[in-house]
Picture (cartoon, rainbow, N blue to C red):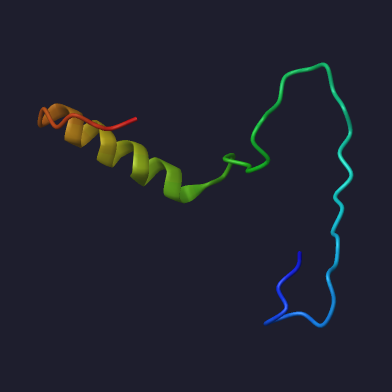
Length: 55
């Protein structure tokens, strides 16, 4: 990053990643997510009303 109005000197950040040949999954865990039931039931209710949901 190089922004002379904020930083005194440019810097570089690195994040190491491991290569995998298997499938990739989102890091978020949905097991036990109590909000998910409300989100899904709200979406099913909108579907019953004929509201088209955007992807």
